[in-house]
Image (cartoon, rainbow, N blue to C red):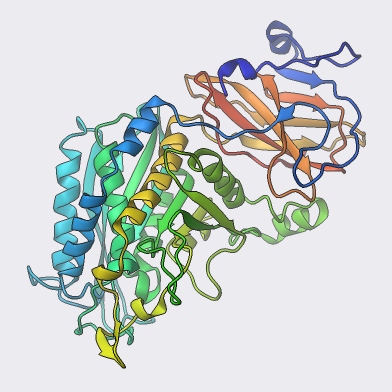
Length: 482
C-alpha cells in the first residue's frame, strides 16, 4: 500500500465528507467520514460491506527483501553448535571457566555482538548487563545473572524501542543440576542464534526506531534475566512498543516424526497480564478481550511476515504461552508492554529438559543433531520482517479513544499525532465483533479526529499510522474517553 491510500474519499456525495487538509487544520484536525449502511454480515471468506476497502497484507519492500535474503543458515548452525559445545550453560554453572559453563558462553556471545557492532558506524553498542540475584526460587545462593545486550539506536525515534530475546542458559531433567551436560541446542541456542543473526544483519542498516537484541540468562530458573532487562528499560524510560521471545525455534519435527517446516507459532495473550481493575471493568463493558496490544502486535507480524520472502506461515495462538508454561516475553507483559513468543509448531520432548542418554535405543537430550538449521533461518526471517517493519514504520498511535460524551449512532475517534518526520497520516480499521482479523480500512489523512457514520455498538475499530512510503504501524485499539 502506498501513501496515496491515506486520503481515500467516499465514492458518492453525501451529507458527510472528509475535511480537506486546510479545513482539518482549522477544525482542530478533525475529519468526518460518510459511510453507507452495512449490508448483510460477511461470510467467512469475505469482509463485510461498509466503508473503506478490504484490508491487505503489507508487502516487503526492496530493502527488506535484501535483508531477508542474507539470513544465513550456515552461520546459524555454527552458533548453535558452538553454544552446545560449552557443555552446560546452566545458570548455576561456572562463570570463570573459559571452556565450559555459562560464563564461557556469555563471553563468546559478547565477542560476537561486539564484532557486529563494529560494522554499525557507532549506532550499535554492546553491554554485559549484570546484577546479583539473592537466594530465591531455583537460586540457592547469591548468583550473578548476566544478560548480553546489543542496542541499535534509532536515527529519528530513538526512544521508541523494540526488543528480541533468546535465552542462553540451559538445563537437563533436574533443573538444579548445574554439572551434567546440558547442550541446550533447541532450548534455546536456536533462539540465541536468531538474535545474533538479526544483530549481524541489522547492525549496518540504519533504523528509525531502536532495536534491542538480547541473549538473556536464567530463563530456566524463573525468567530472572528478562525480568531485569525489562526493569532496566522501564527505569530508562524506554517506550517499548513490541517485544519477541524466540524460545525453542530449532526444529519442525514433532515427537511422532511429523513435520511442519514452514510454520511457526506466535503466542499472544488476550486479557493483559498487567491489566488493572479499572481497565478490567472497562473491558467488561465495551469488549476487547481479543484486542490487547499483544494481539495487535501478533496481527502485525502476520501482516508483514507471511509472504514469499520468508516462506513461512505464522500461526497465532490466542494464549499467553503454551499450556501452564511460559517464556521471557512474560517479563515484558508484566511491565504492560506488548510482547509475544515465537516457538516451533510441534515439540519433541525427548530433546527438551532431558539428561543426555540413550534409553531403550532412543537418544535423549537437546543435541544439535535434532535441529533443522534451515528452519531456524526461516524463523529468523519472520523475526526480521517483523522487527524491520516495526522499526521503520511510524509508532503505534497513542491516546486513542472513542469519544463517549454523547450517545449517538455514529463513532468519533480521536488520537495523538505522532512526531515521526515521515508520518503521512492515519487509517481507521474495523471489523465485525465476531471476526478475528481487521477486515476493512479507511484512509483518513493527517488528522487526529474522525467521525464515522457507523455504530460502535456493532463493530470494533482501530487506528494505525502510515508513513510516506506506505509502512504501517500496529493498530491501536481505542478506549472510551472524552
